[in-house]
Image (cartoon, rainbow, N blue to C red; front, side):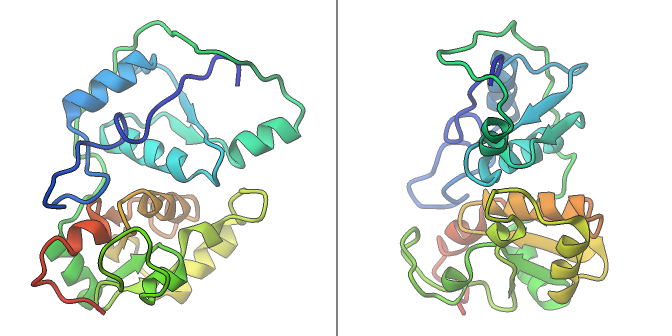
Length: 235
């Protein structure tokens, strides 16, 4: 889109991976690294931010959640993303954009983040949602992580089933019903995870849009962090 700036998932929206797998495949970036990346993209405290991608808003949701986590509330996700923009016949451009540097000050802690131990407690005393595709939840067709399965006690609500064939989010009432069917009755009792903490943010966005859980807790390390400790149980 004219004026858009590229953000890299691996270097701006995630921190460095550890060789032992602790922290998962897309760890939380440091405040310093996130601030630097966002300032380079032109993000400032007094400017609205719209994020989009070309795959059902998965990466865009990660950017949305991180901006909220680091204290920038004026951020939205373009429903339908790139596909919706092109389908609307709106202008497109090529090449790279070099914006004026922003002044965002990244202050962590504005969204709820949980650890592996806390995820286990959510699974047994609240609602822990696994937002990966259902076959991976069941331990089938696992191609991303060396151990298949899910956290015992978690329930399956695949994030990508929250959007239609065009990549647009389902109506808020439908999103709410999907979460309530999984047992969510109090937004503060919902936590979500996935394989590496990206689709978990997509589920958190759907939960916020539906008003069922405006601030769902996210296990950022997710399954790839969970299995880094072989003593943790697997279902």
